Length: 53
Image 1 (cartoon, helix red, strand yellow):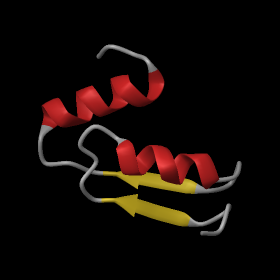
Image 2 (cartoon, rainbow, N blue to C red):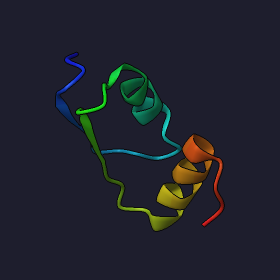
Image 3 (cartoon, rainbow, N blue to C red):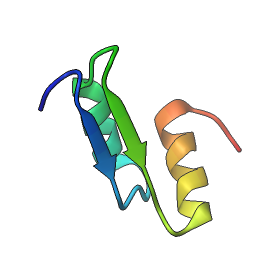
Image 4 (cartoon, rainbow, N blue to C red):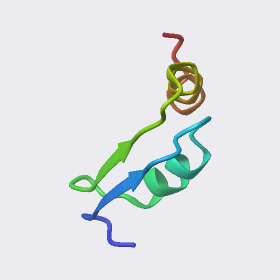
């Protein structure tokens, strides 16, 4: 993985894979996270960033 790469998590869910990617990304890296279930996105964002949407 490159710290300045662009990565896609196409099954965001609760954000487990996204968390691993974010740990390796640098300041200029990008992560695009998608999920067809809006409730999964809400739960994943809350789990990753400690926010309630």
